[in-house]
Structures are given as C-alpha cells and as structure tokens.
Amino acid sequence: MTAIIVLALRPMSQSTDAPARPFDDASAVEPLGDGRFLADVDLNWSAPTAANGGYVAAMVVRAIELQADPFGQRRLRSLTLHYLRPAGAGPLELQVELVREGRRISNVAVRGIQNGRAVLSALAALAVPDIPAAATWQPAPPEVAPAPPRGAPSLPPDRWRRDERDHWLGHVPGTPSIFQRMRFAPRFGGIPLSGRELAPGAGPETGGWISLPEPHPIDAAYVALLADVWWPPGFEPLDRPAVAPTIDLTIHFRADIPPAGLPDQPVLGWYRSSAARDGLVEEDGLLFLRDGTLLAHSRQLAIFMPVDAG
Image 1 (cartoon, rainbow, N blue to C red):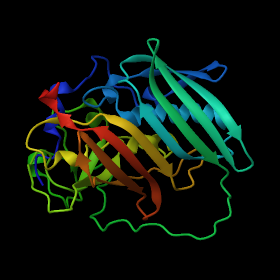
Image 2 (image 1 turned 180 degrees about the vertical axis):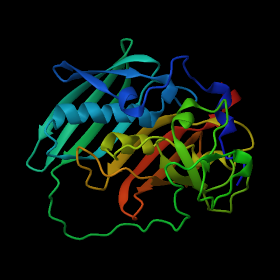
Image 3 (image 1 turned 30 degrees about the horizontal axis):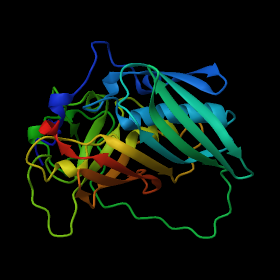
Image 4 (image 1 turned 90 degrees about the vertical axis):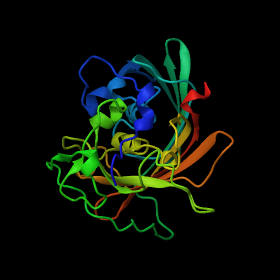
C-alpha cells in the first residue's frame, strides 16, 4: 500500500499560522455559567473544509460532562450531532441543557453558536455504569498486524506496506491539518483516488491503528475524535477529488470509560460504507482497544460530491 494519504483533500485544506495546540488544550471548554461553555476552535485540527467533526464532537463531550455529570458518576453512552454550518476558527459557545435526569439515564441537549449563528445541534445520553446486563456479546476485531510502538519512527508513504509493524505512516505536506496532529498505521483498504472498481454489492473500507504523538488516556472526548478522524472509505474507488462534509454523526460509547480515561494505547479503527447515491454517503465505524474490547461504534451521513461541483 503506497501513497495512502488523501491527496484529494489538498485543494480545500485549512490551517493557521499559529502553532498547533495539544488535543486537550485545543478541545478544552471554559464554563460561563447557566449551562454555557466557551470553546476556541483551532483550525490546526481541521478537515478540508472546516474544523473536523470529531474534533468539534470532543468539545461537545467536554461541555456535556462538565454540565450534566460534574462528579463523574455516569458514563456518556450516546451522542448524535447535526452539523448545521462549518465551524471556523475562534470562539464557539456551547449551550448545554440537562433535559432529564432519571435513575439510570440522563438526557442532554446541546446547541453550538458561532458568530451569532447556530453551527451544531446535539443530543446525548449518559448512563450509570452498573446497569444489569441481560446478555453480553460484541463483534470480534479483525485480525491485523499489531500497532507500531509509540516511539516508532515514521515511514515515507511511498515505502509503506499494510503489514508494517515498526513504523507509523509518514505525513505528506499539504494534507488536511488534522492528519498532521495524529499518527496512523493503515491496515484496511487501498489507496484513495485509486479508481478501484468495487465488486457488485460490495462497499469500500479503510482504517487501521490510530494514536496521538504523545501519551494520552482514552477518555470520551478522545473517542469522539477517533470516530471521525480517518479519511472516508468512499474516497478509494474515486478517480477525481471529492468532498465529504458530515451531515450527522452518531457515536455509541460501548466500553465503560471512567472520567480519568482508560490506559493510553493505540486504537484500531475500522470504517466501512455500504451505500453512496444521490450525492450522499454513509459510513459505519468500529473502534477497538488493543485487547479486542469494543470501545465504540459510530455511524454518519455525509454529502459526497466532486470538488468542482460548486
């Protein structure tokens, strides 16, 4: 597997001249009172057309946890975001309302305002961690080569192979800035814009191991980032550049993630699409811990059109 970086995204990539802030700093929120929080959107964590949807979701998670669960007694289990407008650089106000707090489940609504306009709307559910289980099952993670060690060097994309165990994938200048903030070791799918013809009834897939450059606990905000940090699987069968801005994203947090997070480790992301039609594409994602534990699954719908479509 060579030249894996999504060159299709270059023409519309955003960035800033300011140094990139670490994830926790870039996704932090400041309480303003009355359920209002102030975030500072950093386009050094941007996708090609605006701030990355997973990065914005991480800010929403932090605001929800501070407002609806300040003592860490419940776990975020479901988050659905509708992205109404692209989030640009600068202040983003998040208005959090605890709609209902039941014995086991809390329901929360969030509205995001930037420059006087609504940019997102979200609903979330938190649950107590000890709900009695009627039964237990989960999908098995796919068999792939293990993740490279945290301190492993990067390998240029033209030398990358899918079973590479000793290197992370190197960056290519000009790709969306969020890709420069993360480390990737692809294990699924092929080369974006390869024009690979899909078998009848089949859909594309992509994914692999993901990590921040520095150690970081796996908390709910970080899981939200990982749900939308990889390039879309639908780019592989294309033969010309496209954009895929997210319309809505739902994340189900399936592992018990305490407020302090789970131990630092690479996460395996597996992203697949089954249908692209009428200018829209869906994507399903699964996130696994290194021991095979299902961390989260996600589903999103995105606009899917050529860059030159206007």
